[in-house]
Image (tube, rainbow, N blue to C red):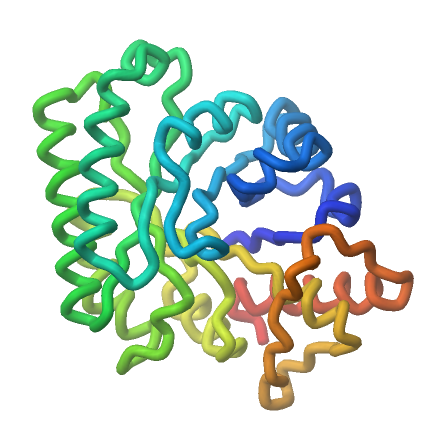
Length: 273
């Protein structure tokens, strides 16, 4: 499982050269420096995912905005619009996005046709499963009707927010997402490193080959707060990202902590802690 870091903008140069990135729509829109970094990395050959920023604003950006931003930075994958914890809004958002993609000349022609990620939402495990299955069914319908356009199965995004459901993320992967993965023959991405930090290691150890990647800002957030992660200890309370997180420049000591925490994150994502 590949680990993907989400650093503050002033720290981007310290993560240059990685193979995978996750960029955020609202920062592509507001920061030329941020957009330029991911554009440069994409041109270098890195796999850049454009996230719709639903985690930050409750609902993701529209597909029109995402496609425009994706083309700007040449993102290789775009997260379709979703709404946190709302299965019905997310299902409808996916349907609208797929319809609108059909009307976009660049997507239809293949001039710019990024891979797409769908992210299920819901208020309960049953709600989450209904959302995931409906979006996958809708995708299959479009792929049958327009096989030359919807020619690659979507990546299944699984949010860390649902680690609180019975069985945690491991249980949800086993009961909902792995069966869908097999049906679509596709990949899974974990959206965020849950607060039960070391649970990820068990998931990675057992299922790492079935999960493509996981992203997180936590190594930097912990570093900013003077916290050095230790897998031998109970995970420290998460101090949360501050409203100014993406504009924050780390001190030398904070950066050293963030770099160490990033190594722990990488080892955890490999099931090695």
